[in-house]
Each structure stands twice: as structure tokens, then as C-alpha cells.
Amino acid sequence: MIKIEIHTLAGQFDIEIKKNEDFYILLVILSKSQYFQEDGRVWSGKIEETEKLFEIVNLIKECYIKPSVPTRITINDGRLIKINLKDDESQITLRLVDIDENTNESELIQKIKELTNDIIDHNAMLKDYLDIFMD
Image 1 (tube, rainbow, N blue to C red):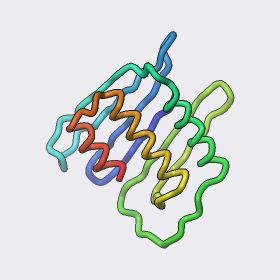
Image 2: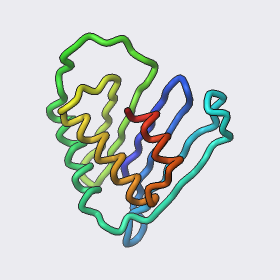
Image 3: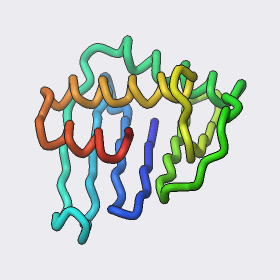
Image 4: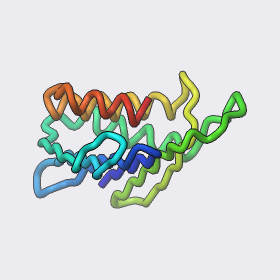
């Protein structure tokens, strides 16, 4: 199972990937937010091609083993991305506050966005929320 929690001043955005008997399910939850004047939304879909999913798992492991060193000093903008990976072998937790371009962490976030967009059929509203919470 992979769980991505994104906490910002605007609200919370969660992406979960769970294994059912023979396939994986993607669940995206936007929590209620005063900032966006939303009562919350949920999207879900079945992951039929697992190649991108396994790329994400490998990137999570790589980010955990060799985290990128920040190249600049930044002020926390109120966003925290927490990624949990639980598999048969281990449990890994990443906390990403600032993400430099061209790093494993930036590639990981991009792959998660691509997989989510592909599974939810490029829903325009979901794409906007992915851009807001993950860019």
C-alpha cells in the first residue's frame, strides 16, 4: 500500500494505492476546505497497468535510501508531503517539505501525478487540484 498525504494551509489531499485480490485501486480524497469552498471530493479508479506503480515504489525506496540534499534555503510554505510505503518487505516513510527540481523526489511527485491523471481519465478538476497541492 502507498499513502500520500499532502497537508497545506488550503486543506488536505490524500492519494492511496491499495491492493485488492488481483488488482490495485487508486483512491484520491480532497478533504473539506474553507479555502477552496469545497465540502470534499473523492475520485477512484482501478490500476490496470502496474509498470508506473512499480516505478513509483522504486523511486520511494531510492528517495529513502539516498535523499537529495537541498540546494537552497527555503522558508516552509506550509506544505508537507508525507509518503508511506508498506509492502511485504518493509515500511518506508518520507517527509518532503521542499522539493528541488531534477531530483528523485521531483521525479517521484511527477510520476504520482501522471499515474493519478491516467487512472482518473485526466479529469480537469482533479488535475487542477494535483497542480495546486503538488507543484
